[in-house]
Structures are given as C-alpha cells and as structure tokens.
Image (cartoon, rainbow, N blue to C red; front, top):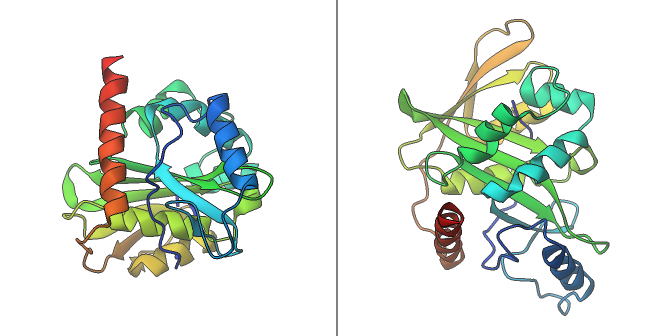
Length: 239
C-alpha cells in the first residue's frame, strides 16, 4: 500500500525511555532490558510477540522521530521504496518528513512505530500511518512500511491491528492505492475487512476496505499511553 503488512493484538507500552528515543540513554535502556530478560513466562510492560516469536513493542511516532524515519528509509530496498510510495525516491526530503512526522497529532493523523526487541538489542523495524480523508471522515488512508529483513514476521499485522484499535470512531472504511502485484499489502488489507477494488490503472489498484464495527473499550495501558503522549507533545510544543 503506499504501505505493507494481521493476528497479533499489539498493545501500547506504559513506559517511554524519553522524548527523543534516539538518545544514547534510551538505546542503553532497551539494550539492558533486552539482555536482562524477565523470568520465563513473563514480559516487559506492553510487550508482545511477533509471528516468529520476537518480543516487540508499539509506541507513538513523535516529532523527534524524523531521523528515525530517514534512517529506516535508507535501509529499504529499491523495491520496498517503490511499493511504499509508488514512486522512485532517493531520500525522504523535508516536505515528505513534514507530511509523515510534523502532521501527526494522534487524533486526525495517527502514526505508530514498532520496536523489535531481539536479544542483540532493540530497533525500530516498522511504521504505520492512518489519515482520515478531510472530505470524507468515514474514509481513511493507511500506510505501513516494514524493513526488508523484518517482512513476513508479523510486523505489519501488529501495526495494522493497533491502528484499527486506535482509529477514530467515524472511520468505517479504508481507501488506499496499492501496486497490483503487492500481494503482501493486499493480504494485509484483506485481514482488516471486506476488500473491493476496480481494475488496475498503470499497475495500481484503488482499494476500499469496509471495516468491522470498532471496539470502543480500551485498555488501561492504552489510556496511560495517550496521557503520556499528550503531555510529551505539549512539552515539545512549549520548548
């Protein structure tokens, strides 16, 4: 989809190592927690397992994550870049970063990062966006990007599951453009709801996904994460 990725239920973590997760202390924290794993059968708060058994966590994309997105883009193969943006891009320029990062508000533009926590250390391996259509609040575009080495492990599935839990109540369908040969993205969309599309035009499908009724109940973990994110954004705005 301008995008990727079904049935891990991703949850929000209740901890955040800092507003700028690229800070050395944050990396050290993740590394230490990954090496000092809890006892068997236990997990870190907000942790879940990917399809291949790798522990992972999902947290909000913050204004300080522009560098994370740029670095992740550089690690994508040319094929993954083409499938994500339906165009050939050498870099994420400033206008694209403003679109992908600065416009995120957690309400009208929701964006999530998935952090994989293998024994050798944690790293961001996927990002997902949900953006309602201003002209049609019942529709929203979705975009998922997963690093090549992590594709096929359930990263996209977990991100989409969390986005669907977080979507605005008014959103009842997804509309997005997908390369006709992008089977992974089409399968991901099929897992989200009832899919329909017209004939491909220049190798691209205009896909609509009718979503099941939203689950309104939200966990305490998600509510705490919302409060933390709101406070963080307010602090960053003030500083």
